Image (cartoon, rainbow, N blue to C red):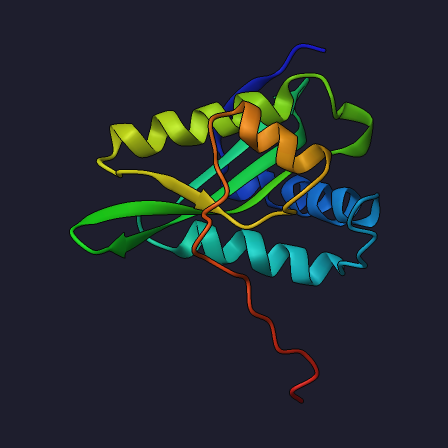
Length: 149
């Protein structure tokens, strides 16, 4: 499948939200995202100064997205890659790899020292990130507290 990667604009918003809803509904996540929540997530990144929001497009349709927010860590900025999602039917076609590479290249071009993300510690997603040059930060843990309302 041929595709191109470009910056997300307002015209991509609906398609980007659809990617999140569909990608997270599939294994391994099996999560229920509302379209409204996905729109809010993409809009937040688009409205955040110096963020990186990229879409993979096939014949004008959004088939994958990468959403990263610039953060200051110590002396240099980094990109927190909040979302990397590809439509289930388009997965395993190099789209995620292309989006991840584009995020890293864009981050470097914009003076960032690195890219970090949170994902599964084991399994195919972990293997994907490791093949792409990412490593598990041994000193860090993910802490969560749910049901606070």
